[in-house]
Length: 349
Image (tube, helix red, strand yellow):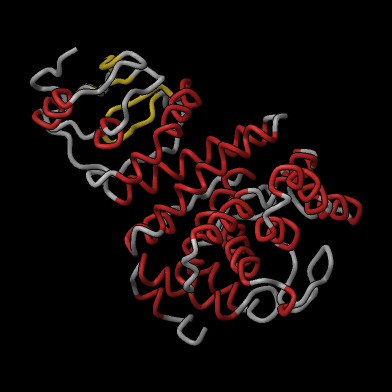
């Protein structure tokens, strides 16, 4: 299929948004990303000037250099796939993500978006799946690509760190904690690839135990009863049980799963550990976990703006969170989102 002369000829450069709105059947992807893939297991569409979507390429047909040249000639910036084919699309993307991360033609923001959305899809499937072993192997590969990306430089770290959402799901929170933790880890000087992979694996699965917690309890509005709270806290023990057969030989990942609800001052759970007993990787994960929770919309709590969340966290220094790691979190947001708010109120963190 050829691109008509007027097909999206006046399409401006747009930020790719993956958030679905009511009645929205199609999701966008930048052509640089799509054309860097050998093929896609989903039909691909063009959006016409009148808003209608037309089939551009059948599933699994290869993208050629001529296709790229024709799209660029007609100033096409985005192509689309049906949201009903999301799982198939992201399976294809997941299998080729390493080539996309290594590409020199794809912008850092787009790479970050692809990684983030692939992770959301994978973790969503993981929480729905009964086969933990298969999903863990997929996750290990994706985490390796996260690590490769954040080690590409400051721009990559800022791009992945700047991705945050406001619709709370356990899998989305898990992906956010992973992205924030990896960015923070690099920021504080952790450069060892294996260590970063362990952080990524532990944080993306830190809430794996919630697979065994009733959804109605996780999404209950208002305060939990004492009995409900005791059951909720058991997600840590459940997580250890679920993760141990697959990643039990990774002490850093397991420490994150086991200790992400411990507090700096020893008042957390399950073991009431204090700062000296919490390894640096766990303290990074705790800061990321708290920030993601505060900035997520949940059934029982509204989402806070970034600045407000950081001000709340400032009051948790030395109690829940590590002051040095919190300081690096603030610095990362000053770099990623400069402005007057970032410079006021937090300067003495």
